[in-house]
Image (cartoon, rainbow, N blue to C red; front, side, top):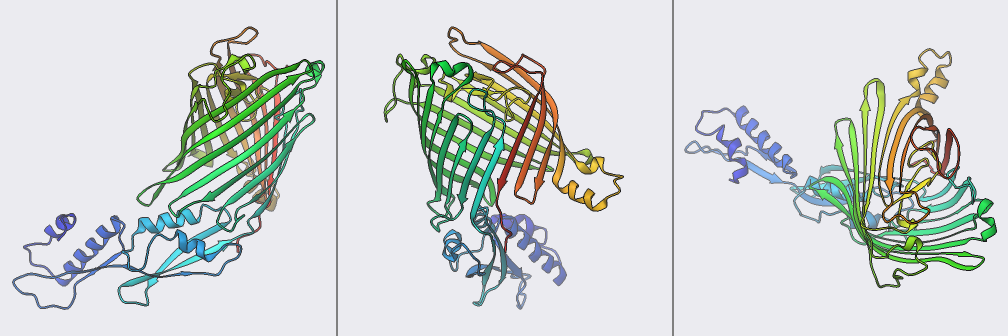
Length: 482
């Protein structure tokens, strides 16, 4: 008998026992198999007991037929491809959970597995219950996180197709514009095996023509970025831990004035990182470390007279992002975020850490300060609207608002510092903001974020003001699952 079961069996050895006790032993053995992730049945077969020896029979379930319910928009063969158990293999929960995790990575498909007795002896058949929705989504967004010189309002239109080639691949393309800037982008992600490995590549192009105080200089700024990444899902037995990735990025940016070229950067970086998940009782934590190394070669341009901030192209940079979400008393929710960046040398603007704005320190303009080394923290308290609607005379309205609206209280802080400060640059900045806002979700397709922030540390740099109102409107079309 395997050693793993000896502690269980020892409790019943060398003792007088009944059939009920033998049944209890069989159940304990089944539970141990289950703990190890194996589906098995243990029972006392008909037998004649000789010399006080009782035989227990264990039957490990074997994979039988894989049955898939009919569904639209996606191919059945893709689900068979992801299913990791072959015919007559021992049924293991970890392989079942991994297969379902990979199948459910596509946001337009939900898959559940039901086990039932197989048509062949000692086998278990699996039925996949599949719900799908139309995989093409229209995307639109509007916010006021632009800069004054090119336009505060930013508009975006795009489309996402989550089964573009029929391979569970995702194609995202869009266009963003404002008064004096525009940007276009396209990204494609495609699975390349049934173990959670995927390839992602993309390209973006942007241009801006700053006005106001910069108009006399005739600034024409353009950038082209391309990327190529490999992503790999990480599991510990049946538990999904997140993903790791490795890739290369190309970043070309040119700024011209009426007098000619002002800056010209061509960066090539190798980037490795991860996106990990830790779940606790009433909480979830996301951990995102990333390391980037600038390299020579592949078209990179070494430091020269046109390099932005006289920065080297062979920099090293480490970024860390932590997000912790937790339920707290009164059905409130707390969200704590931490971001940090550490650089080995002076960086070009496209690699610096941006401080200020709705995604950083509210109450300050977006990108109010750019830092080489920085740390940022955000604390948010989400209060459900039901906390304020206890005595409303409109119960139906109360129920609707409770589901869609939450009050937000926040405090943001960030400290940034430049390396190798140049003439005219500010060495460091200390930003802090507090305020309140609303989060509104409508029809599972619209998210409206409103925030009113007040700066309580350094004064704003790029724009003057004692407070700032941030808003964003995001829409993505979604049809019901069926």
